[in-house]
Image (cartoon, rainbow, N blue to C red; front, side, top):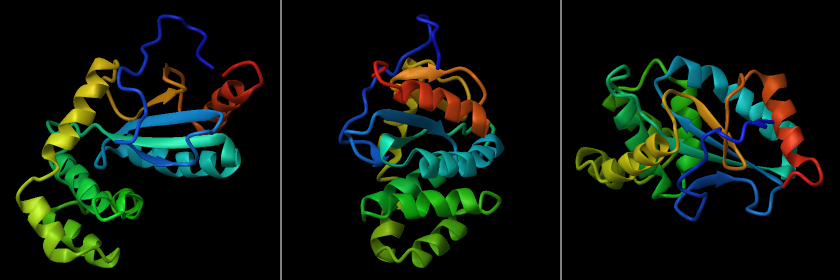
Amino acid sequence: MNSDPHSPRLVLPVGVRDHTQGSAKATVSLVEYGDYECPYCGAAYPIVKEVQKRMGVKLRFVFRNFPLGNMHPHASLAAEAAEAAGAQDKFWEMHDMLYENQDALAKNDLLGYARRIQVDSPRFVAALTGHEFAERVREDFLSGVKSGVNGTPTFYINGIRHNASYELEVLMQALEAAAAPGRH
């Protein structure tokens, strides 16, 4: 794992506001700051899925929004769509839908995904149109900035920024090291 004591740390600890998969009692927490339109985040998406599969109960995965709106014009609204779905307990379904359809993130696409994952459409449309979750997305973004995120995806393992590659074997090695007895 990162042995650099100067590696940036999460400023906002993982808590009830976060979208998580896995137990809070897991040995290792992996936090990703991501952008739904970022091709690098898209490349990391199946890697994270594989890491989750391999680590099983030892891993808690957390996703936080970090839309790079200047580079990715649909990223902020896509993040809001994930949050709007999350308000209906469908965050992860929308999260997956967005990454699996990265090249189609216009508002009409988002509305189609909402229908496919069977959220309450009028409620979803109202949340998206009224930007009900824009502040929530902004909170994630600002917590990332304060934690040293300067691009996407950025990963934190047990609160410390993972500065190495997120290639599968490199990430697995860092996670397994963090899970080793005496490391947590």
